Amino acid sequence: MEHSGTARALDADQPLRLQVDGRDVADYVWHSDLPASTAPRPYLHPVRTLTGTTVTDARPHSHTHQLGISIAAPDIGGRNFWGGRTFVAGHGPAWLDNHGAQHHQRWLRHTESELAHTLHWVDGQGAALLSERRAIACVPLTSDAWTLAVQTRLTNATDRPLPIRSPASLGRVGAGYGGFFWRGPAVNGQVRVQSPAGTGVRAVHGTTAPWLTVSGTSGGAAWTMLFVPADATTAQDRWFVRARDYLGVGSSLTWDRPLVLEPGEHLERHILAVVADGNLSEDAAAALAEAARPPA
Image 1: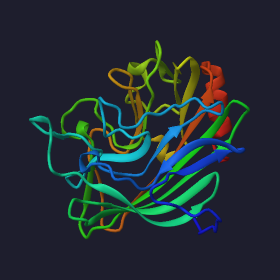
Image 2: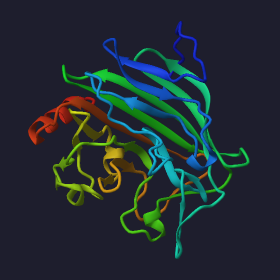
Image 3: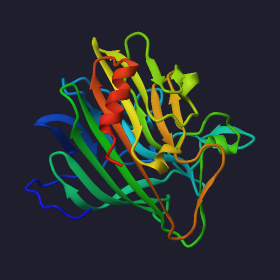
């Protein structure tokens, strides 16, 4: 990720708009003044299909800490980088004064279709727990779909082992979220979830399927989100899928046991989110997943 000059001056109060073939497809909010309880962080919203249908939601009334497409984690060294309540073993969700934040540090690249920058994940006192290098690219795929590629490299910035936990690792069965996360929009009617592991949330949640789709209709327009791990390491992570109360998909960094980073150690993940107009069939989704993956 080398710096690429651009004529665009970046205003911290304005999102960075990303395009595919000259069409606006996503806004990247890289600086915001959100409440500490949301675990403030950069996020993508709105994300749109090529015909302009919005496929994300941000700060919805039911879960004001869910922000479009972001990278978040509920427990890093005892700090909440997810937002909202913290799951406490033996007690349940509780409001704690333990929220962290992600702060932009330096741009490495920013063009009409891609960006890369460095960030620090800091606790409430401003001490960095993680340093991150993040890259996002918007790539044309077909006449009806484009690919959002999200890459992250997270490095332990402390001098001690740093545990990363999900609520599932603390006893909340099935709550293995943390990592890449998409908050879906309000939908009209039913939502269809499908993958090679089966159809429906119960068939897909907690699996390591090679792809999954969520299809719905918003404001009369049909859309599909297709999620694909782009490398072998990411493919080992389980999918978190929810369609009750809210619509969300995550690629879990750690499910039911902690992941521990030693000082200076890093992890890398690479997720592809294909944004498509229309409700895709299983065969069409499988073909798009294959087309979106980078060459081996």
